[in-house]
Image (cartoon, rainbow, N blue to C red; front, top):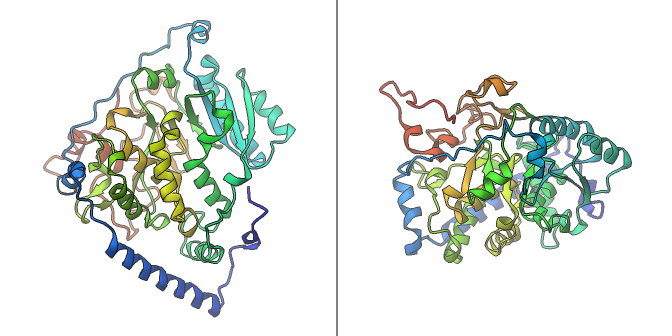
Length: 425
């Protein structure tokens, strides 16, 4: 899924670096470190009164009240014809997928249709940067009784922005690929992260919808979902739902938090008065971002939230800095920071009851064994999956999901073991 109009497409990750390339990379790194040091020195301090909660969180992290979960009302005994006759939120299951990923999205569809959508019949909307072929349309359409729509991403949303320096971008591809950052050398991956961050909700095919559920190819849904997550979100004034909260490789987005701090200093009026920064700040590391994030390949969200002027002011600010191409900014940390900045925690929901797996990351609720086809996982299962324990990256003392839950989920006994081991309802 590449932009063929860009000259950088001729690049392929080199197998062997010559001394000239090595020298260029070292020079680039030196300049980058120098610029970073200068920028850090000049980063404005956040001192406005509206940042009292943020400043306090730096020194009193983990002092927030424990999260109180909302419990969905089960539709398990409601006939399917009654469910389908109900008024439903204007919602869709959406997927960014290639023609070549047909088998992967077929697997995801089979799982979600069997576990949920055969009862509720929400439409599927597929996005691709090139038109879908007839085989893709026929085979996906045969897997559901719901409507299927097929949309092409505009070229302007899937290409190198005009303000990006191509030579600097190529240096980034070489460097991140060389040091082993996941997909650091892939051009299409940069476009994908940027599209998921700031453009998916702008596509006109979503104009008549209020809610989306993001579904990736090659994922698994292990448990019967006996309620409508879209209706649950709407009825409880929720804006964003997640399934995993994990630690990610900080080498992918080293300047995002600094840029976010600068944004907050310039736009203090946009920060939600109940914004809870405590779970994303490392009190042992001068209040720096701890690199925890919602695993965005599963998310259920309000399109109005992402369409808002507030969110787009933030996205545009970060986008113009070039981090999607000069570094490898992902949509997961950007969505996470936006949710923290612009929503209260009570507008966010942890879908622990939805058993799910994406690649090596998996979670399975312990209290729904009779409704799931997976081995129960503990609350901290995915904390070190993307950043191994042996990595030199600084890590918070508690797993990301415990930091988000707060309160009793952070308490330990005299032996250092967590008092509360699960989160089930």
